[in-house]
Amino acid sequence: MGSTIEPHVRFQNHLVTGRDSNRHLQNAFRAHGLANFSLYILQWVVFPPDATRREMREIILRAERSAIDLLEPCYNFGKHASSRLGVPHTETAKLLMSASMMGKNLGKVPINK
Image (cartoon, rainbow, N blue to C red; front, side, top):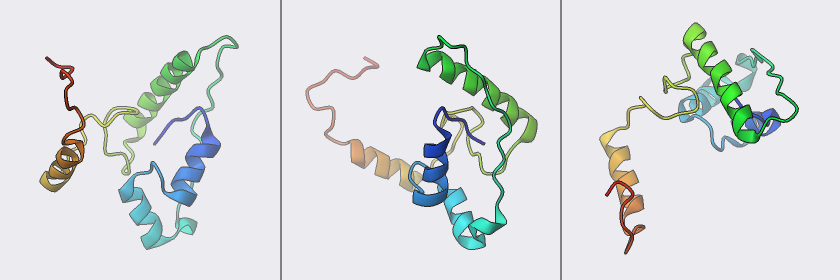
């Protein structure tokens, strides 16, 4: 399940490059082959002519949230549209994320202080 303002970029990323894509989905593509998957566009959203990019994103996320609630897709780990909220990380992943951020905030006051 996903949403985008630029579907051609999203499809390219998922189906060709694997960039910005779900690792579980990419593994399934490799294991079973793309020919065993179907891509369906569940809803086209029409934007008001004067909509800002932010307003378009809000409209799309509402549509995606409805589809996730209705269909409960198996390749979505997050329970929130366009968010990593609720997606568990392994202890190894947490350590790698922590290590990658070490030293990147030198001399700056943390946002949460």
